[in-house]
Image (cartoon, rainbow, N blue to C red; front, side):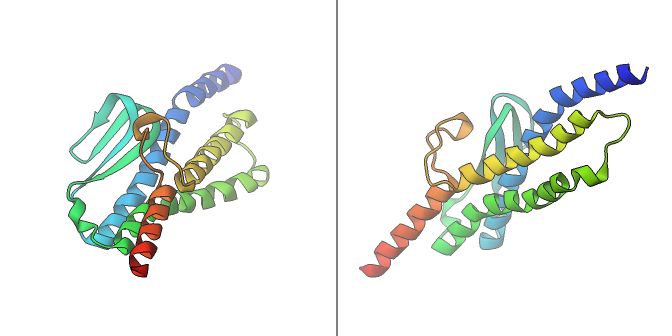
Length: 178
């Protein structure tokens, strides 16, 4: 009976949890943008879209789509971001949130061998549950800071956070030289 339960749990973990991990990771990244935006502007009129494809669920402020790769933080009033500092605060919020999420994930992964695994879960499943979010968030962190346009998903054609920051700082330097 124990082995059957382990197999069922492992199947559920391998099917549903990766999707939930991806949604949560993108959501946390986008919430980071929201926090940066709200701290810089005091404005609460914004919206977050996680993923692309068929809409799974949502509200006025949040939408989660079937394919959880990429996300968008949208403001209702662009005019609130009236300085380079405010824009940088918003653009850095996402990568900072992802970085802060990486800290406990790295700590957990490093200490995994010391913690042991619960009897009901297989060792491979536990390693996967720790390693997958770590790797996924590391990818989000690197891709968001790499200064290039996105070529896939809901962000296709948009500039990465890193590219947005590079463009802002370059424009700011150019204007200060005039």
